[in-house]
Image: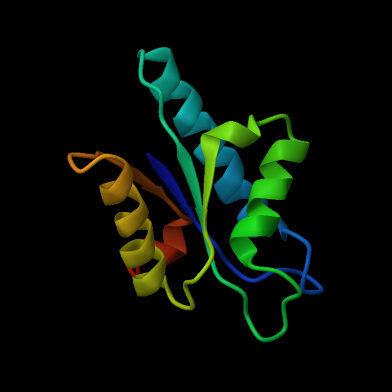
Length: 115
């Protein structure tokens, strides 16, 4: 699994450049794992903030699909309201799909300590 952690949306619907860079990195990691013979799933992780019209994970998935990423390789974790919940809820998705899962978590450098 490749888990991409969300961040706020612009205008409640649009992926900002910071989040777009996380998604690009997630795509790159996914491609590298797939080239090794794996069949990774990319999890977009982020719930809906009070100023957002949709969950961050949905905007993230839509952005990836618009960039040509296959929709069937994306799972959406859309309940989280914090980084801790991003990871906890993504873990539940992965454990349900594959109890002995392995994952890579993608975020930005300033956010890595919190993650």
